Length: 201
Image (cartoon, rainbow, N blue to C red; front, side, top):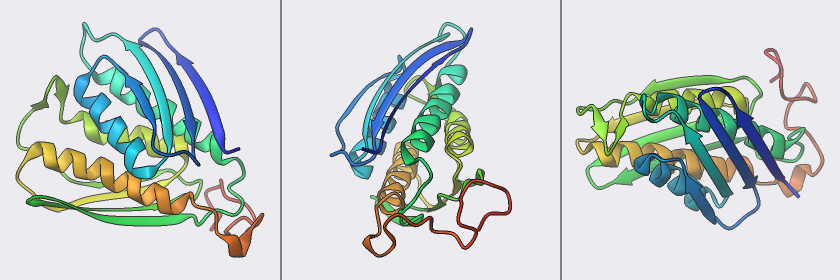
């Protein structure tokens, strides 16, 4: 069973996450930030990874800590559920159209956290969430999950579509990358025999 639970408590946030990598895309998300809920729900639905996430944060200040810490906690749960990463496909990519917007996402479940972010927004907020926080969420997720993550919006105008295509792109790329490859059951997909260090390939 590739499942995990994570509880992350700081002076700024308290977050509980449960995931099932082999789920059906079922979700239950409550962060106190409506647009962030919507995006994490998209991440679950289109990756087929079940996600239950509840967060209580210092929203009287702003959404920064809650958004970033949700990314960290989700990434920690993801890494925990993967274990030693034996048998996974490892790489995944997706090209996501959403009306006038097109976003490309590519990932490597490498153990080497890295984010390349080539997207942007023309308005400061979507709902009550600052649009600058999307990059912070993806950086936090990639960092704690131990993945290399590239996100590039090739073109787009509608800010909602841009954000949603990034999350759906990550979801579809994850769906491919975490899938078990029957040709390498029980084998770590690396010539080093392990995934998790700066020199492991």
